[in-house]
Length: 437
Image (cartoon, rainbow, N blue to C red; front, side):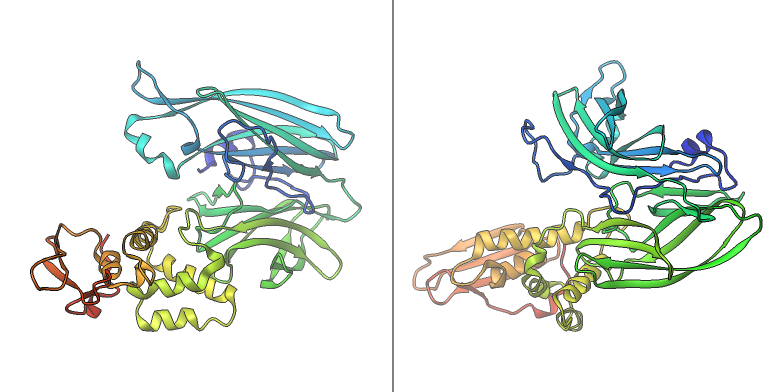
């Protein structure tokens, strides 16, 4: 979702689309479902995401909370509006903000209508509904108790998220926290159009941006050099670089692009610092949406690439010295083959591993189904157009004939052992790496 018009209407800046925020670095930005008695709820499933962002004015002592809300449309119940023909979901948001003394400082209820044209109802799986709520708050530590209620099916979900509005110190440079962006575009008038990454998951991106603001109390321009780095949950540094900035008096916006080539499935931390202190940062994740394999058994998933990867491609992935490196090369392999790279799903990958799953169910005997000749043909070509089965034809051994009319191919399998181990009469090594889907 792009917020250009939304934000520019709310606040005018030299940069048209500037979203100012701070999430105090030591606090998590992704809440968890806390209601353990949810009806019909998978407690390990994300139904929505919250990103509380606090920005600061030059002369204000407090901050403005921008609470970004992303709701996955596939989790909502839509009902058809007989008058318009559109499908609608009716939602209630209840936002309760408590300070460090557990006193409620904000208690707001909101009702919103999510409307989808009939033509789009079948495509909601990869779509989200976004909302933005704003609050002015004094410096403090806070917790948001957020409740989402789907009125169409009377289902309720809850999350808690912590954040802080920071005290102004004596330093002449005051940093906001980091906001993650999936895209940044510059308009004809030099205004910036940004796409917030509310779920803080960079797994579907080849690159992402981070953004923060620095308020300068100096009367003239000053130049400063900072470092930024990304570390994993074991404190291993995966990315590090220098950030050279010129700060003018007042509010300054900083944008920086980062590739995801060195990242792998897991949790990460972004830090911006100098020799004196850590100034700002952000926690984020790298999760590949709808990934159909167990990344803890990455070597099996790599071995199963045999029917779609070339020998050189497979060797390169296997040569990774660590599990993380092999995982990273595995992800890159599939990302390069993604037929729709701008969507969260990799349809080719989903189809490929779904065929492996089916092959294991249909053709396993003393070896896994994906390793058998029938499994191989099924994985590469899919379901045959026709199958002739001959289990007991006179004195001949059991055999099957598979016809693929769409590619004008026929495959004959013979069970020499009599124990269901059907082998191809003619090998098809030339067809590998040409999976049809």
